[in-house]
Length: 475
Ligand code: NAD
Image (cartoon, rainbow, N blue to C red):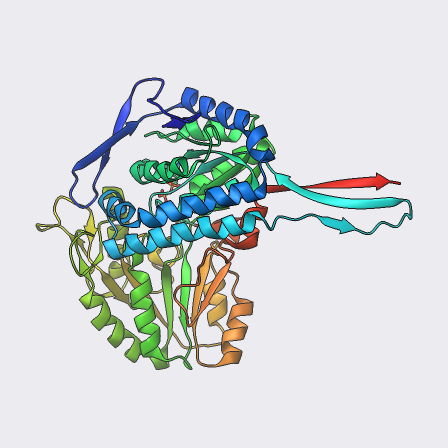
């Protein structure tokens, strides 16, 4: 763990093992922290806040630029570590490190753009001035699926704003978090400003984060169930909260789309991170006129996706995070097939050597999916593409919006009016129009409904770490 500028063991002296999900091999150990460790980390962050928040925005920007440079120099080592610890194909790990470093550069720039306002008063002898200041100590909880970029997406803007941080990374990927911390440390971020507590059981840490009076803000990325619990507990103590949660993204192919281009996009997007992405398409609504061409192209593309160890050449799908994840995907696929869906490609876990030591599910294309099936409503965190054929164009936005989630949605159409109506009518935070990668460090990312509160990235991303203060000056 990293507390007050020192790498430390847990107060209890306990440790936990970190494993490679492709092989089951133990690849490291980390301190197994608990309440006392989290409290120490919060105290360190609180003690550092005064001096850190008094530094100039230019100074903080310089440190973030330096961190960006170091992360760029170490990109290959970080990518190798990520594939080892998280399992994603090396090419995907390299792309994630690049995405992660983008947040450092973007928020280095954004640090110097935090401004106040001069506001008009109705009184001739009065002037109003608004000022934006850092919220204080930020407690951050991050997931395993994007184990480096989810850290920089929070730490970049928090540090730029002048906040100090206590992070609890996911128990499956603490080695990536440690490597990110080393980047910040080597860039010269002072002791106490960034702290990290690792733990096998996240609950006691979450309790400190949501109840400690010196924590002013909670930022969480993970599942909706945990996010609701933590947001509720933090809100009860009136802490600022942002939560980026699960999703159930619709992917709509209109009859005026190019179905082959849509299928190529769907196949590329669906298997990113083995389908373990919050913005992964989970319901592919394909108009009946486009269905044959779409399914033919998908069948060919999905059939070509190779599962395996992320270090092997040509692998498009790595292992899932653990056995429970494979069991959940298998249950969803079995339920769909039992209720009439067809596994056009794949459809089962991979159990033969060399897959037997890891947690693998075959890249899968399901056709004939309908709303009676669990997969239609439950987040699918695995490499399964479910296709639903529809006939009524006027009804499809309603079908797509019929979910409690509201993170990402995708639309394929060659008609500007169809695309614009869908863009305006879909109740989701991020819409890809003929585009499967609608994300960038400079753009707001976040969801509606059960997908969360707040935005990360862009100018919205730094606003989450700032308070507005009003000054009324009588002359
Ligand atoms: P998870 O909620 O189980 O875990 C996320 C983090 O929360 C981990 O660090 C975990 O240790 C911690 N945690 C779990 N229970 C806790 C508790 N009681 N108190 C404090 N911390 C606790 O989710 P996961 O399975 O690791 O991640 C997958 C989920 O994250 C998916 O639902 C996915 O859609 C979502 N996700 C969302 C985004 C986004 O930006 N919206 C990005 C990535 C992942």
